[in-house]
Length: 148
Image (tube, rainbow, N blue to C red; front, side, top):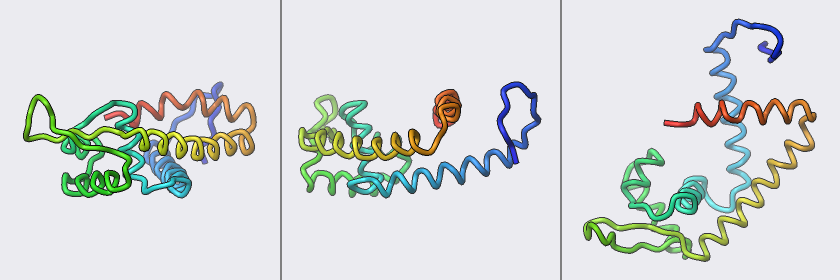
């Protein structure tokens, strides 16, 4: 078992580390999904639109790594719920841009508060102050691994 020690140079079995990281992240993602008010893909799209602004359906499909047909269905479901709206791209009439509605923004904020509240409570209740610091120090590494 690999234990982190900042003072000891350790040879790490990267395959084992990758396997354990994949499993741990998978469990965490499933737990976060259970806290969502709506399906994970919809939440991901709403979050991206909130952070990055208008996007085309094709761009969203590429970024989210799903088929355009799947993204079209996700967008239709979000639009039916009044969370997003579509409009023609002013620079290319063949494309449709998608953006959050005010209802979508409010729904997303409520969902984030709920999920982040659970995660913040878990971090505060289940991790020691030293473990919380270690997690904070590891976060930039996890973010870098998640980049394309």
